[in-house]
Image (cartoon, rainbow, N blue to C red):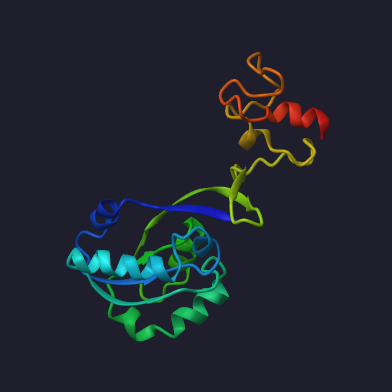
Length: 185
């Protein structure tokens, strides 16, 4: 799951300067789970933008905007509203934003409303745990499925530092040292 957080509303409004007719795209997968791009967040964004003087031409929430077929299917239902827009605000990760841009038939200005922060797993209670920094240099095959880039606050790739104490990290003494975990993996 890709974890996102909403940009400050003033940052969003500033990015939309010069654009008045906005179409909003949400995300039915990751951003919905993060509570940053589902129905309530799209509705709140509409209110916030209207309060800032923007006209919202429409919105949609593809089940997964990062999947072109799902995005195209949902936006096809909104062709009239998209034609009336001069910009699109996407409440999804960077992949969703780029997917919209790649599949935009009208050459609209496309803006992100969210910051993409990391890849996570979710437990049964809905808590997110950062497990992947999406660095593009995956070494999980060498580390027993434990990522030291993400789980070591210092991102060390050469073993535990001298600050580890009783298996805990010196940066956060509540956190297990990733390299101690690797030793037992």
